[in-house]
Length: 387
Image (cartoon, rainbow, N blue to C red):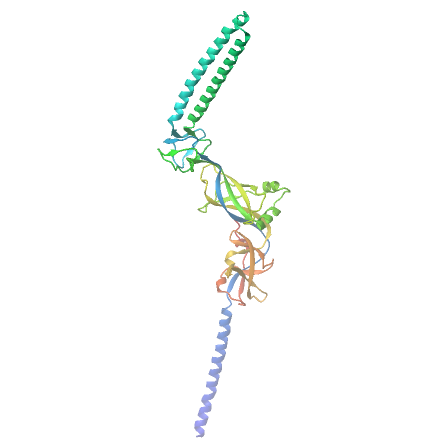
């Protein structure tokens, strides 16, 4: 029995040492594993930057002239000399209206003129015949005065006939309809043979002069106050002239190659919508943009001292925008921010951050509140991309 107990004691000491080694090894592995979980994330320190921002406003497009072509007489459409979407020049023939009554009126008034001219000639001959008789005291002066009045009456009838002829020719000219301006033809609702008149509801077509185009857009009252307070000048017109050139973003997302200018702002605020109507003018020499198009007026603005946050460094919760800010212990905390506009791939921060704050710029989907990270300093110039 004594021998058995000694043997057990002999084995007990190595087993205790082995257990201790396993425990220490386990603790060491846990420490190493914890260290491995502190991951590296790119971090930038916020500092004021020059930012080029812009504001977009939906707009409707109109040519500088949109002229409705309407018939001034009653008749049938005899000929259409243009097609929809065709470019036309001022004075180019567009339509011919079949109205034979106006041709007949011209012939009738021409005949009336001949009759009136003959009456004038006869009255003049009568005056010439009576005058020597009055001079010879053969007839009374009353007959000469009467002959002169008759001549004046016939001359008036001749003038009236000439006026009727001019009116008939004017009406006849309305059977040929010409383009009043250079422009582009709109739709053609009436085809050959259609009956038209001066009271027809729809025009024959619309000619749009789109050499230059107007972009009409609206801004709300607050935007208008900020907009014009930031502009230089005293009067509204002076402020408009100092505004920078604006861009027109087309429906397909492309930007019109030529820049425009904001030229007018309404003097009244729409009481129903609380908005200010404005108009920008753009050259459209190639006729790319047509009347009735939809587009976006993009107004640029330069901020000399702005805090920029990359869009990929933000995330949204219930419509609110957040970023992860690094504290002194290298732990991240989510901060809500308010932005005023976009500048390239970054937001211009209005509230929530200050210069000197450090934010995580990438991989934020793996972060959580209070997580410790290993910051990797990133150069801000490599992150910001101004438009």
